[in-house]
Length: 155
Image (cartoon, rainbow, N blue to C red; front, top):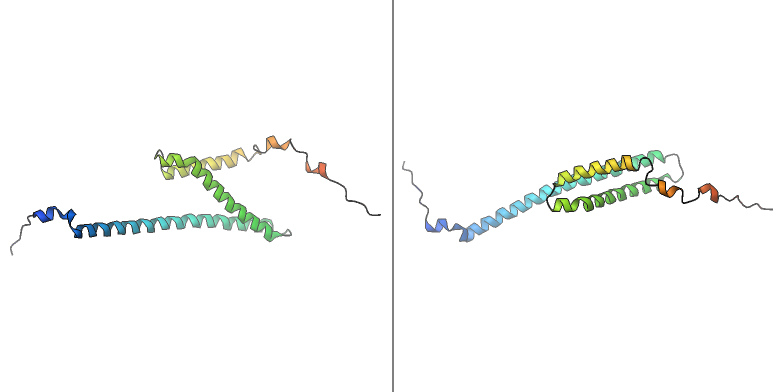
């Protein structure tokens, strides 16, 4: 059995200019785009699942708290709507604060999410836990008991 040696011809060296090479390039490009889209969709599913788990947790907590009150269903609906709004406001805050840093590639997306999670947790636990943000407003308005009127009497 004799082995043949391969000598590249001028046509083989200029393969980039052929239509077959361009077709292969386009096919690989499309396959990569499809793979990237599938991976991105998978990550989106995880994010939507986490948000849904949070909203189910809010639903369960508000249902448990409002089970003995009148209008409990309205309270549960308001709690879930409030949880949804909290998710959106939090996402907007993170996008506004971390967008420029991630966009300029100063930090990665993962680093930005860790910093934002730590900052929001610390702010929620320390800053507002003691009522610090409501304290300056507390003394500007009279207490609700100052507005109490006795019911009218009928004669």
